Length: 528
Image (tube, rainbow, N blue to C red):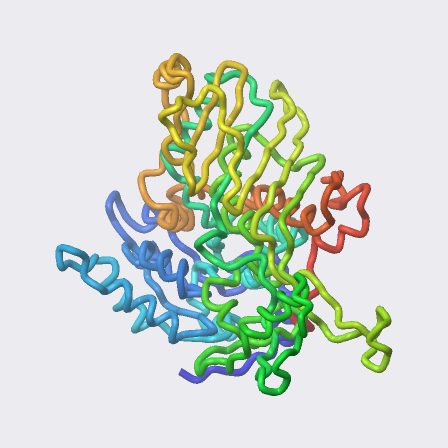
């Protein structure tokens, strides 16, 4: 298949000129025709099958695709590292202990082999007109750029969590979703579709634990998953050039410089389009395996740290059940950021002057953080303080928790009510109340919310066909993501302060210098 090279500027300019609210049909885009229009009960028209593409196929993207191919059609795969994508597909073909390969893994392998392959999502959008929906599972920093381009072209989108990298992007995508209600959108926080998530909502609505004024949320990430709090790699310098480069002064800065240098420099692997990986990131960052694959989560340019990664699976449940929107103020504290060493502002200046010294700037998220969000009262619900702990930090044990129950290391949520506590594990799993008398009341609460009888991904496919409502649409997911990313911005604003947030203007009231952390500086040709 011949592929026309599309420049960044040409594509963005062309896509930006398209009216987002225009009729899909008038632009020649395919429409999903509901089966009841074309035939009787049980009839499945060809257009009832969603033609979907995946951008960012390695990791979560291949997992999402494996679920979707059960009923839908994979027509295109886009990844800056297609070799890594293929290895993900191959890994799913390994037999289980019973010697069996999952049928959906076999089907994924078949559809992956037939799907058109791209490194640049813009070329895919230019050429693959038959795409109905796009799964976006790249690192966080590219989510919004790809989602906005797809939505401008009338494509339904499934965006992995977190929805985007910045508060500005969250607001932009939410407005696009509101302006285009016929688009089926979904964020990939699959715990939102579970039975446990609905039980939590029903118990809170039934006042089982009484008014909630405080919530504790924790996760063990990043410990044991990806690096944080480490310096950015610097090119390796052979110690033979200077056997004692740091002398005997081994303070923290020297130790960090030593680690950074020892991490070395790596050539970009064959098959990896590193420039496309960087995408909207304005700074030129050299390839290193500490970023790709998977480890990008801990780096400010690419991810959102533990809060950005797991907040969508944990903060989601109190955010939904308590009807939260935007915090009024935030306090954040942490261990040290991992730093990057940049050249002096003036290389000709004396090294003893600020202009002549190498600059140290934050590059990696801290190893552990705590964030305290304050939310105003809502209707008959009181004001709430939501406390976040990560990096192996735990909240205090509730007095009502039996001695036999240990706070789970992976993470969880504790709602503190006037009558008792409600706890759940990550993804909304295993909701339970204490004391037992309160749990007895919870067990009698009737089911009042519709259940989702299929996976989070297939819920999105059904929403595309008009057979269901998306479980976690962008209209909701953007506000959840904004709250998570406000915690990140407050953390970058500095230790030991409370920042107040104006949700109407989307800016910090008492810390204008921190507003720079609510949006990013885009590389030329990548702005949205």
